[in-house]
Length: 248
Image (cartoon, rainbow, N blue to C red; front, side, top):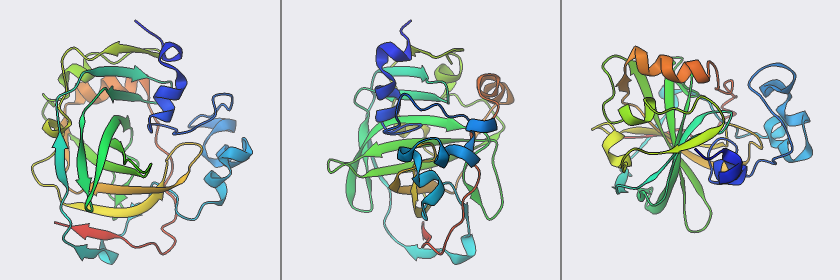
């Protein structure tokens, strides 16, 4: 088993997951004196957490959404990878997982990770878990597809992930190759908004595509994640008049 230091915190973080570009020497948490209310004061590189106007996550105001017709076009492929506990979440880092075409631009997938409870809300509704699928285009633009999960049947696609969650900061190889496309809901309708990283340094310029159709996980799968992270969601941030787009 290799640790995140072997991987490099830079891989766990700089690969756009929980804390892209975050400084290794600045400690932050989800509660207490280093929690979200204080992130902006922990160091100047985290200033956007406090001063940013387009911060994420948000409570998506469905009634204000404007319709468009840009479909998500998945182009994912099976890839080897690692399941990483980076101290703030569980993320699955893929070696070459393909890409998605979002608003006409191709975005290779870097990794996906989980938050409990779900970070985004939709007109006040909150799910117990969500996944953020993090992509980065050739020009460095970041796009995130969000998937909500509700408690129900066991999620067979994610079974090997939930059965192999590292208990401490470390990583384990995926037992078999993983295809992101297999975890998507059949309906890819989404809410799109301009936001930020939801962890320090809270950099803006991130576009979110939050899928409106939730998937199911079992209570046992949710418990397995919450045993490691009982709360790793940033509080809701103001919409501040930004445009919300809805696509079927």
